[in-house]
Length: 276
Image 1 (cartoon, one colour):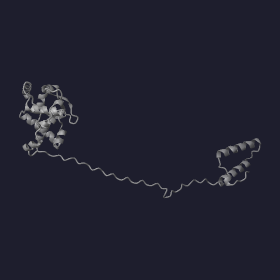
Image 2: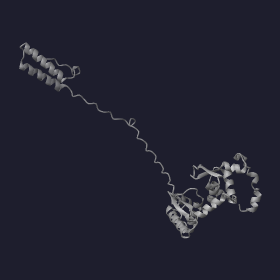
Image 3: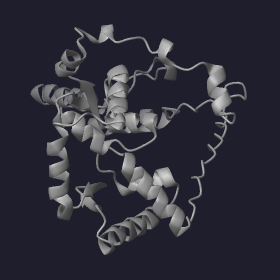
Image 4: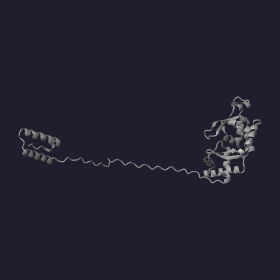
């Protein structure tokens, strides 16, 4: 029998190692002819006693964290103030007379077909009211066989000369090649010469009248040509041609006379237009 050892001197029990050790001991005893079942029972009893005496391995108890060791709670994020919603400008319900007049004025100065959304934004009314106004204008022109007609082209609307009067327009343009330029044509040509490149809408805004017919005359005579489109409005940009310089006896636009000496004095303008 083995002598008892203090608990602290006992090595941890490995059941696989113990079984192997016992099997080897049994074989050695059998080879020596010393195998005795009673002895083996005594060994088994001693092992059982040793296992019963060994205290159970204590599991580590997790330490309770102190208040200082507790993680700080994340501070709640401040609520972001919702951005105030920008209320759209209220749309007006225009009087039919005001609506038709405004539409006609806008269509008169545009260079290219204009869509209903743009017209509604300029008039500050709904697109539905614009559509009704455009339909009323078109039917009105057709009812009285006006010289102009309103047509939808692609996504926009534009005024055109009526086909019934095409012969008159062609005759005028053909005879215009042999006639002198009108005062309106000269004024339009001057605006283009000093402000080029410039759109039709800009020329019309400076002169205060529509320039579509005059522009066609100047283009037909070869004095003005289109060179591209305005990146902001999409309207065509127009400049003078070399023929314009030839007719005036100039070699470049730098030789155009300065405008300042040709402008009236401020006092004269105020006398003629006291409300200006």
